[in-house]
Image 1 (cartoon, rainbow, N blue to C red):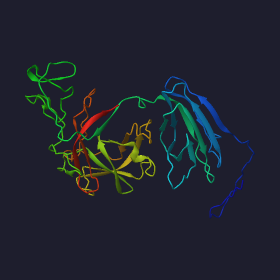
Image 2 (image 1 turned 120 degrees about the vertical axis):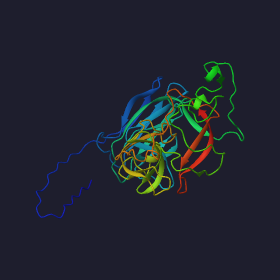
Image 3 (image 1 turned 90 degrees about the horizontal axis):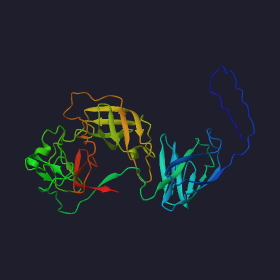
Image 4 (image 1 turned 45 degrees about the vertical axis):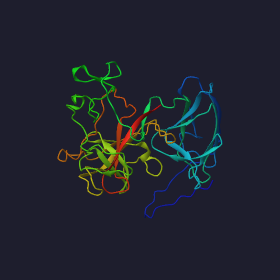
Length: 364
């Protein structure tokens, strides 16, 4: 080992004193038999944890679950791995069941799932750098149900498909309109569509979009200013990168993948542009004070792709017609197949655009 000390250009130096000792090489290899119960049950760490681990180290961990229906889940506390590209890996590389991955340091947790009961993983440290300490929690998960809770996605509907409602017998799968008329919808109240004959399902709704219903199109169309008052443009080092939604005076809701890879979750480079119809003409521009990425976000599967952003400057009441919190659905509301969804943002253009309608379907 060669250690070089370089002094700053100052006149007076008080000197330094250092102590060195030889320490034994610390190996990191283990064979782990995970339990049948799903969840995280143990931890593994890099050599000399919690100190930085040295260059050229190699860690080999083998995992085996008791059932073929259980895969292996690895939770990295300050770390993420992604498929290796032609560029190579700056911070060492992983080989997991003969697939190559690059590693990178993050300031939030990520989860990597391997759909197999037998997993062979190897970490090959960088040959040039010592790196931040690595802590990994391991456990099993149900391969057929990788997410602890269900999630939803929007997908295109069949051409010409429309929502139709009919008066049917009332039960726990229907919505009751006035005069005891029932329709085949469980959550028709304030969903933006008039379903009841008397229109009672949309009466008294305090939050709705002012944009008209659009035909299904490709590429979107310009919105009305203020039509989507919760839409925010999120800028990274001055350039628009992601969209986000207003949920309160100080907080925004966005996607965790916006802060992965080359766009870190350090709030310093990020600014939020609120009440903006045309790019560069926002009613309020606020630096981002804090970014909170969901602790179970998985960059491989995009499970839990959610992040919260706290503004440094709360938006004032003055532009209320152009800045409002997003409509929050009632507790327990479920998205049913055939219901319409909208996607808003700026896309490749400068004006706020809406692409709609899509048709929502549940992802199991």
